[in-house]
Length: 455
Ligand code: HEM
Image 1 (cartoon, rainbow, N blue to C red):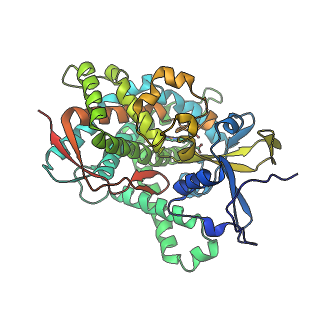
Image 2: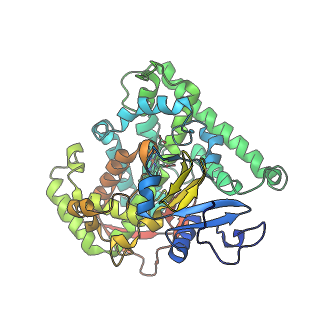
Image 3: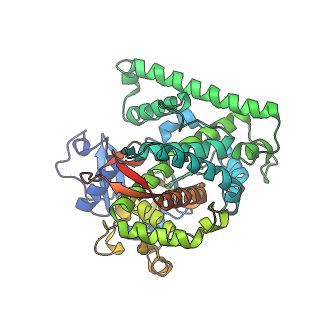
């Protein structure tokens, strides 16, 4: 028996619902589809079935690793040309996933953030210095939050500065990675024959970009090996020295390269996007910014924000959570059935069939209340979190393949937002209406703010 799901009207032979596909804003389109067709629906693209789920009840099954597991959907699968079996792009069964996860998990606990705190604070300090030099000019917020997040991951990851705040152009590694991601995002929906003919020049550039990035990262690893390990508190140090408790093995140098590329990509755009969305909401909700400033003044009593104080900024943390609710910067994830199953007792799925979780819609579900578009950090008060459906909020994915960088992201984003709020008043552009740009992650498109030093 086959499942019958709501789908766009006018389904065509062979083409299916291809006319109803939006490539440039596919996540927001996935959300609008859910608002029209319901919390489980389907698009048929040239015979391939794409099932969109935003039902918290169905997610009780889908998010359970015993029943369903991570699936590498398009375009994540295509990121493997750069990151191979790095943590994010590894298939569940690849041995390097379990090995790298065991080796790296201790570097991502809340306590491990103590080791990165001073470095993170230095990076925010550079942002502040940069803004102080900008006077009353408009500031391109997504560009600057990208810079701060890139510096944070470069330095805490492998002791490398991209000199982001000194440059007017992008660092060559960043430029090559950005071109590679853009190429992958586009070509994911293309045909190999087209790539070898019509897009030949871009493909050649792409191969050169991947080779360049690989050789640059390998040079950083080789330099550390020459210098000798010891004395560093970064991820590279751990990758070079720690062993997997299960097998006693270390990571090989190719895999270390893929992990570094993974952290650079997974650990920078996502966090930077959250900072930018939060700054947008803070700029247009001055009463929320003031409440946060009162908390910051109460907790941050000395010159520097100390490690222990970051976790005490509970209201700032709720601002981060609420930004991630409305705009989960990784806007969804894929899951595949471990065995033939009857989802929700109604929808048959065969082993290996997959679904896409539409976080943008899950996070706007009617269970959030009457006005899900309203920015309200108090939705994350502990008593309200406890009373909530457990599958209603999943910005970091689920199960064993959930985000390893969650604590890292919270620490860095709270630190950045608290420092900005303490130092500046934020003025929005009165003509700006939030528009969200999708690459693989989400960003507020063309968001600019004026910042003025507080007394
Ligand atoms: C996995 C979101 C920050 C590293 C994931 C997944 C999501 C996610 C949804 C699961 C993807 C899937 O199921 O296919 C986010 C968001 C972030 C963030 C919203 C910022 C707010 C970071 C940071 C790092 C990082 C800062 C590293 C420093 C990773 C890695 C994985 C991952 C390595 C793969 C884990 C595995 O499969 O073992 N992230 N992430 N992320 N994230 Fe993050």
